[in-house]
Image 1 (cartoon, rainbow, N blue to C red):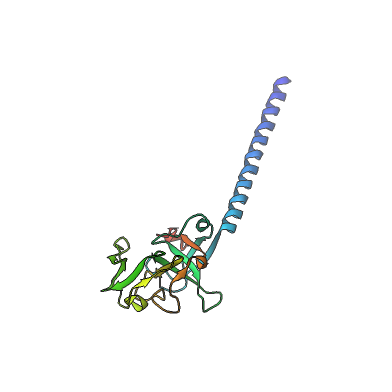
Image 2 (spheres, rainbow, N blue to C red):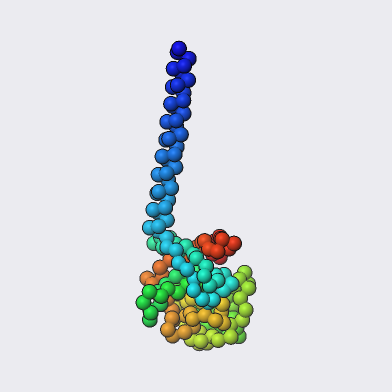
Length: 187
């Protein structure tokens, strides 16, 4: 009789352990989901200005939290509002940092008079330097941004976009979730 009670006790404790793990797993999932929802946004890319990095229709996760502790860096892909159209966000790559001088000559970007090495991205030569045909000196809270599709992008070269203030940067695009075949980090 005591053996039967012992087996019954083991069965109960195993069920308690499983229930405990399931409850813990559920709590972890809820905390992660809430944290991701509060600290990140999902946005859909419209247009080809960031091609080939991002394509029309891609869905990306925007990290809206990290820039509270860290400054944006060169080559980060950032999201900011378009100042002339409500509810319109732009997504571009940071090229020039605060205090730097940016110029586009002979199809290349120059930072403080030195050609910026963008060989890791494989961008072609820039055909239209726009405002950057003359040197642009960035303020202490300004960034110069370009689309990856350099010859089909509205970016800091155009007066309607211009330099981007630090306070207008909403976050960093860091993960593409759709389409599934391109799932992974935004580089």
